[in-house]
Length: 408
Ligand SMILES: Nc1nc2c(c(=O)[nH]1)N[C@H]1C(S)=C(S)[C@@H](COP(=O)(O)O)O[C@H]1N2
Ligand SMILES: [Mo]
Image 1 (cartoon, rainbow, N blue to C red):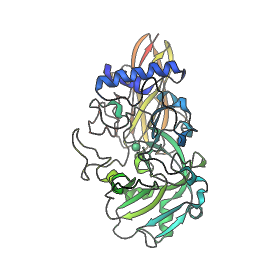
Image 2: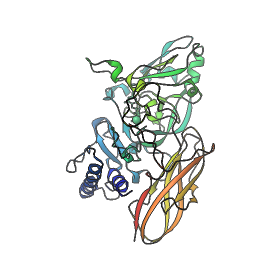
Image 3: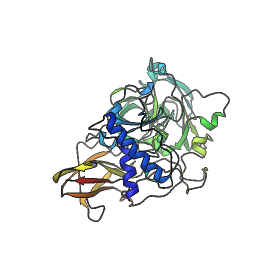
């Protein structure tokens, strides 16, 4: 428990309210101490806080933990009480270097090839805009969000809670596009989307390309999006066009999408065949293991963090149900011994959005372990612990996701 607490604070927070160099150093040093206890290597050195990479230079540096040029996490303290995550605070995760930013200079000219339909063809974003439009709020979350809490030191970015955000997507329902092209070809069981990165030469393309297959049941909600939070989709988040699959883990939301195919089988690209597969610690990935598709029910506390004043305080957080709407949120300030129901804040933006929540608590001086537990309308609820797995995917255990607060 102690270790998890130290890790959580360190991995999570150089302190948003006071983002000075000093607090960055203190935070990072804490992170280093904590991670070395668990035996994995910190990605940043305390003395060298990373600056934002060029392709994400417009982001709010103080709201983010920058691990590498391709991995940035939102601080727990920067999540706030709004339903929609501002774009400049949203996490970033690229498996490959992004394509040149010039691809968003003339977004309507971007082309996507649609295959595995009766009349396959290529369509520009300009043409897609005349075929249909919808807007949906949905949580974008990396499969490895919460990986930092796995004691075996799961390889990959040690995300705490901030590899997630809730944003508005606008684009054409994929179903409308398919209907306009004569419907899905017979026998298709998967929707396979391919990212528009150009691949380095000399390597087997299948081993690095971002190409993901999801079951055709996702056709009910999937869209090809050209806007995020009401402005043209940035290059950073996959503009000019992104496959958005509400309620599915981040990796399925293919950025700079250049090909959509309705296929009988899943792609044999490594990112699908052995990547993003849930398996026991020590095992390698293979197609027979569960793939990271629909997200599970999850929540975490966003305030207070670390310290608080005794008396009445507003315990806040966010909760979501993946593809299923939420029923309730419960909060405990004694580490899960007793629970009280919290209240959802703000408008309900639908089953795929997250719901900020609050619960008023009277906290006396001392240490408090604050945890939250969400339940969806089908009765699925967060477990207490982790489901140990090699890559640290899909963690929604309430215990690890809590915060320890010293009240004075
Ligand atoms: N083309 C492409 N799409 C991609 C990726 C990528 O590397 N290339 N990364 C995926 C992963 S693992 C995640 S978690 C999300 C991150 O989306 P964001 O960077 O917009 O936050 O994009 C997904 N889509
Ligand atoms: Mo991810």
